Length: 325
Ligand SMILES: NC(=O)c1ccc[n+]([C@@H]2O[C@H](COP(=O)([O-])OP(=O)(O)OC[C@H]3O[C@@H](n4cnc5c(N)ncnc54)[C@H](OP(=O)(O)O)[C@@H]3O)[C@@H](O)[C@H]2O)c1
Image 1 (tube, helix red, strand yellow):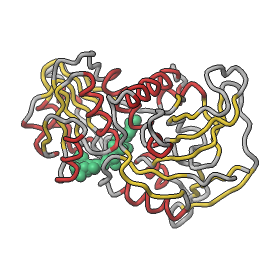
Image 2 (image 1 turned 135 degrees about the horizontal axis):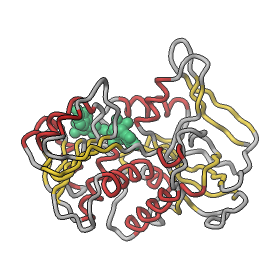
Image 3 (image 1 turned 60 degrees about the horizontal axis):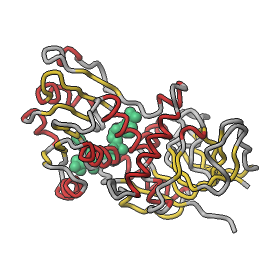
Image 4 (image 1 turned 90 degrees about the vertical axis):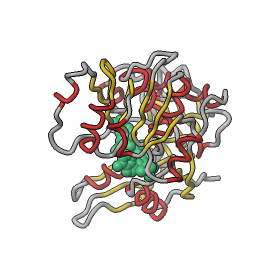
């Protein structure tokens, strides 16, 4: 039996429904994974809030679990493998006991982490890795300064660590003592306030703030000539890209789901997750799960969504799934 926790749009906002059905079979190139743990990301709360009456979606992208079945042509995985992945925004998500996922997006989970700790990693690690090494094009070793705007959130927590791993000097922004301490513990060389960006210089800026418009002018001042900035969250209204012309600065976007959605080299995400797992098991990266919301249910999901929506999460929160005998 498969159980899914489905977000359903109603006139008074989206609600959770629990649905049981037969477990799916994998199509060619797919895995069916028995999900053990998931995390919640801002994209979940945004999609939940956007559901119109009658629309529904199985949310949840981050997952860690055990491969239950492999589809035709899959040679890298076998039943029993312990895996982690962030999946595909266009498909059914991981708030379910069983999930079908394109095998190319998947890697074996770090052996040194529990399922819950592993579930905290995929979406934010892929976002941070693609942003730093593909869009901002940090060389390895990176001789320069990386600024991470929103250092303590999920993406920032991995970007700080990956920036340091690459050899960059890493500055991060935070507004609370607790979030600043978390950034330092992850390796940030210096932590400044979110409103102090205009006063520093950086070669690369990863903007993981929830609102791009607030930080655009400050980034244009802080970025060094021929530097690059990378944004994650959509702008609310028009953005003046001319701000970056004078210094010949590259303005980049990362959308973590582009590879899966448009079918452009999705295997690169499996490869990134293999590297992340290797770095975690080798002690070069640490896990970032800080909040355990307990067993997945409509009640724990509601609590998790409220906390993620608050914009005050430090690191990541996780939920575990009941396992049938
Ligand atoms: N495009 C993509 O592929 C992609 C992927 C992942 C995430 N995102 C987006 O990127 C954003 C960050 O995601 P996340 O998962 O890292 O978020 P998150 O975990 O929810 O971030 C929480 C952190 O936000 C910080 N924060 C609050 N107000 C801020 C402000 N004005 N400026 C900067 N930081 C502030 C808080 O730090 P303080 O308490 O220190 O203020 C808090 O610790 C979200 O909008 C998300 O949807 C996009």
